[in-house]
Image (cartoon, rainbow, N blue to C red; front, side, top):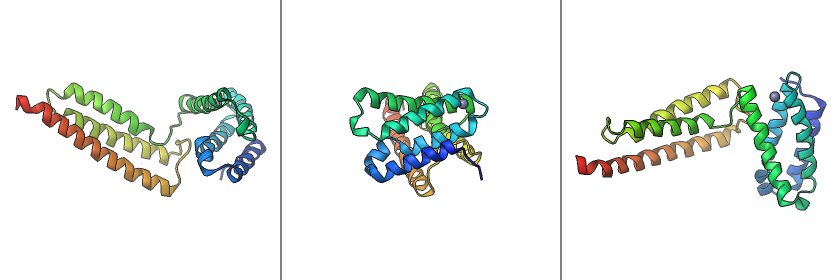
Length: 190
Ligand SMILES: [Zn+2]
């Protein structure tokens, strides 16, 4: 088991305290689970990475702000979310970590692009085939990243299963829609 610094345990304590005071909705809205994951990651890299060292101070400031959420201005909230985004980006770029489902999104985007490009050759079936292959490949890479412990904030088992079901439903929906569009578009030439 990995051992973290006193700093991390201090952050964990504060966030856990917020969990008791904030509503479930606000807890989700302010991405406190993610913030805790970011703190854990940044802590483990900070011995070797100056930016992660600086980010620790930023995270401390962010958790301080949480204590008076109701007093936070719109601007302050904006910079709060921006800071979370920036820390995530740093972990992705510098430390090769990924967010949950990151590759599926990329795979589907690339797949649909390639699919459209090939749709003339594949008689309109390019899009669903492209998305299907892209999603499958992305799904594989996401599972691999999870096994390697590279997912910044892996979901708990229960939600992971739920999101997998949603994912399959979305894929089927997209495929059916793409097939329908291909069918309609293909009709005049068929
Ligand atoms: Zn770093």
